[in-house]
Length: 363
Image (tube, rainbow, N blue to C red; front, side):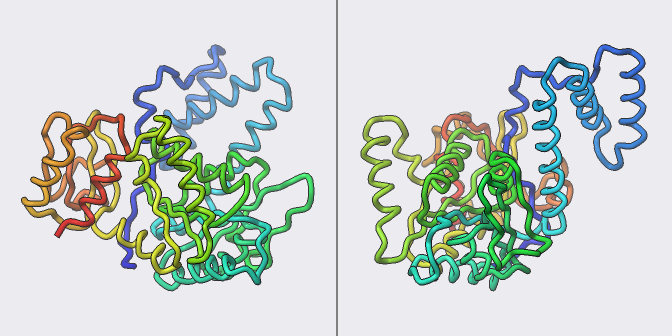
């Protein structure tokens, strides 16, 4: 799978902050403290936006002067510390696409699903992708073994009972243990370009449901979610039957939401689905009420006409246009990429996924 030298950061908020009515504080109300925080934010912000640094400092000092319990501050401190440590671990690999693999910690090495997980992770590593797992035993270990410690990460969780990292990733600089599930799960999703779910229990269900919800609601930019079984296994097929019967037929989700999931029964098919998703599509971002889709190659006029014809519900102003580049791209390194842009009705992200599929399938 060919890698582009620069990748866009996958947004886990998709511009939602522009619609927020919550303001991040930049002052504490103490004039002397505020002056010192302002000075610190300007002198020690490095290459970062000093106003963002000032917001961080003000939030910390507002918490310090509040009536919160000490335990509350401890949670805030640990959360920020874990996020900073995770970003530092992943930073050198920023421009390598990664696949997060979910699955049971209880499945043993003699199970056919274990071999499937191993084979899929190995296929990813052999084609230039890195793999992210929860760092534990079972299918997580299978994926770390298949990709090897050099080409994989383990995001382990600290539990009241012993949960050691699996031997395939133990001792690796690509291993990190999290105190909180929510920061661990955030990084399992935020750092990856695709998710592959193998059979698993409550933890796997939690991770897959949240991933789907983030995309469905537009809180996360769209990425492939793959449900992977062996040819003989019916785990995900039965789960999808439940989703159709109990959720879709009851009107609790839309029929097009099914396109956010891809069920397959071989490592090769799972890998090819990810490769195809990024064949012409590269990334997207929002510019006001317009979505801008970066591409690895231009579309023909015929393909553009098909898009206008098939997606008027989300291209609601009929203003779809293709540009060869855009010097105003918020990421200047990606400014020379061709792109589509249009006014997007942000109510149906499943339809945006279908448009991305159209882009990739076009001649």
